[in-house]
Amino acid sequence: MSSGQTEATGSSRQRAIVVHPALKAVEGGIRLPESRLEEAVGLAQAIDLDVVAAELVPVAKRRPATLIGKGAVERLAELIKETEIDLAVVDGHLSPVQQRNLEKAWSCKVIDRTGLILEIFGERARTREGTLQVELAALNYQRSRLVRSWTHLERQRGGFGFMGGPGETQIEADRRMIGDRIVKLKRELEEVKRTRELHRSARRKIPYPIVALVGYTNAGKSTLFNRLTRAEVLAKDMLFATLDPTMRGLKLPSGRDVILSDTVGFVSDLPHELVAAFRATLEEVLEADVVVHVRDVSHPDAEAQATDVELVLKDLGLGEMVDRGLVEALNKIDLMDETGRVELANQASRRDNAIPVSAMTGVGVDDLLACFDRLLSQGRETLDVQVPFHDGATLAWLYRHGEVVERRDDDIHAHMRVRLDPIDAQRFQQRQAEGKRP
View 1: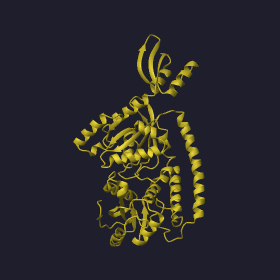
View 2: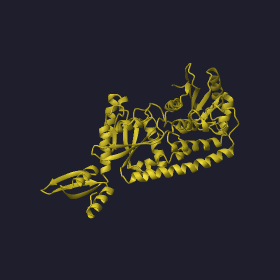
View 3: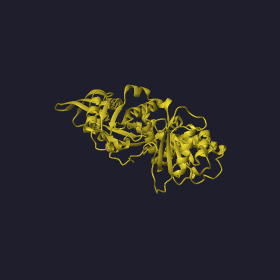
View 4: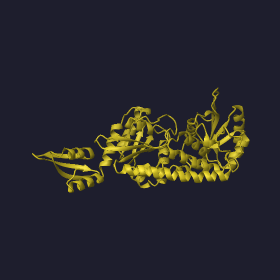
């Protein structure tokens, strides 16, 4: 929706306006304000808001009272009244004072970018840990704003009540009650994390390599995940469609088994407290053997989005991996014209581990899987072994767990050169020394 555009609608959904303060000193041409506004509209629509207006508001200097200028506040107040808007989404960070002042000036509920993202997280989180993490982040956010009542804890819809609804006229939440709830949530999170660590410890014994998909929200991670694993993970053209990591087994062309992990998408200006709240969820990425950055190369802000993702990964402690170079799945080439696809292919051919793909059509997926195989093979040890033909179990194990690069048979033995992961090589050698099968 373009700047200043409005639409009439008979929808019963909550009517909203999205306002993006284009802070000149901050954006400086790095991000396109129009793209940021479009993204903010997408975020609002992700929680089923009826966006009837969207505005770009140039801001030369932050106003302590309202963030945006007085003239813009007054003009938007008229628009909000004329279009009977219930909720204003300001795509930026509002202090509690700025939020209250805008609510008074516009006579409607106002939420900022953090509140909007928390609403989305509240609706989309599925696992126990994800739900606890979101609620903890929401309570820390609410504590400074004296948000009303506790109805969000027993909500029938998703989200956290920042947008109003039941309980809007009830008394403000008691700070001590919020503090007690935070203490309880942290305790519950520790229990959940311990349980998850047990599961991860069990998985390490398997031991399958982990390939993690990361990327900007709506870059196509879940669609690619489904394409690779033939799973039915929610994959919609909707921002933040995936919030909890989903893991599935995947067999690579070499026959190697890996675990593929789909993770929550990143956005620009993701508040630090939200990154911290989801750190445990993103720990699967920290343990990954291969990290795949899924990029929407058809997006006008593709480069800026990539920078945002890399900054978050560095914040999570993956700076060395980012600097070394991630695998890049250059997705959505089906949305590019022929000239753009040829140019992208030429650029990718000059870079390491950059694969043009279309998760929607499957083009390039085989090349991506081959890239996983190649990278995972780099750390393998090469063993020269001889196995008697009657030991079919050991022969089968070597083919199942390793890559047989050379084989020569005599009358009694199979003489093989095999590449194995270090842990499998150690297991094989130990069992052979003990006269047992691996």
